[in-house]
Amino acid sequence: MVSKVEPDRYADTGFSIADTDASVNSLLFSLMMKRTHGERLLMGMDMTATAKQMVWASLPLELNEVERRAAFYKRFYGESCPF
Image 1 (cartoon, rainbow, N blue to C red):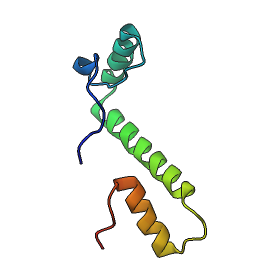
Image 2: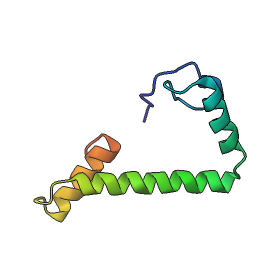
Image 3: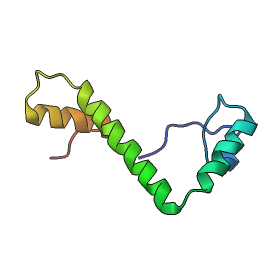
């Protein structure tokens, strides 16, 4: 999967926040880098779980379980479910 985020002026920090002042962006980056690898991994996993919950909750309730799972996969991964 290829990122659709366009490069911006903060590319050297690892963040793609184009609407944030450079000093604030640097502060956010430095605070994030003070966290352990494990803490950053857990944050990413939590964000993914939250995104999945949001996508699941947005699906029409009229769909049966199989249809909801297929719709979830399509919306979350951007392609039709391969099985």
